[in-house]
Length: 135
Length: 149
Image (cartoon, rainbow over all chains, first blue to last red; front, side):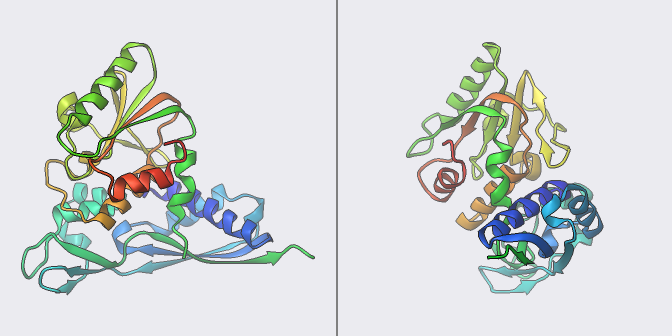
């Protein structure tokens, strides 16, 4: 997912949580970003600061990168996604839709494309901190 | 943890007046032909139309339309699908090409959510969706996530 679209989604999601929890201000947002997503944290951080509303005026954005673990469903081999082994077009396809990896990556031991992405897929809003409305 | 993608899906579709999902209980009955023909006829009527191929395990509308190689979405705060013959067109084939996409249910759901949340359709009169066959994970996800289906 593109960093700007992602920033918009993170802020919309964090706003929903803040409203549910009656927060008048959000002070911290922690985001987990999977390796397969190949998101550039500086671009994501810049997009977040550019798009943030008054609710996030003093918020700190923590971006945690999560390494990938892929596990073959046929032979149970585990391995890590290696961006360097991919050409630019393939890496970009996986950046936008990580499931495209099933068309290009195979188990290093048995060659099966039937693998599970145990870690390192997607972007998650892990938690937010903020100040509650009085009363 | 919260999946932030879900929160923007209906916003991405907010500039579309009407969403038409072409669906059926089984495969091979002509959904893709009907969806593509419907989309092209609506263009001919002067409407602004998008066609979204969500049949991930067997996409075919790009073949019916004759989408030329090298056509791809443009990055603009997400992905803006290309327009040709007056039709705005989005499909997983931009990302997997001619390669097979061996996806399990959870992967289909994830790819579907990713494309719904990243695609910037802009202003359209109609979005025609070529749905996957049956009433499995992707169809249930679409009904759950897209308020106007």
